[in-house]
Image (cartoon, rainbow, N blue to C red):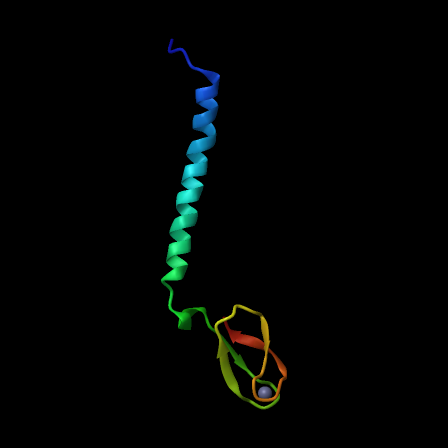
Length: 76
Ligand SMILES: [Zn+2]
């Protein structure tokens, strides 16, 4: 039987999932950085004045720049 040090086993069981998680987080962070600003824009259509506008912020609702009416995003 192979003698196993309990400390080494714990280090492997903690560090391997941590390394996998860190690698995946880095990969998804780099992927979202390379998305263009247009892909991150939300499009809104004002229910009050009909003005169509887009903001790069990811909010479910935003104010119309023309009249100030609060509108839901048509597409996020
Ligand atoms: Zn408006």
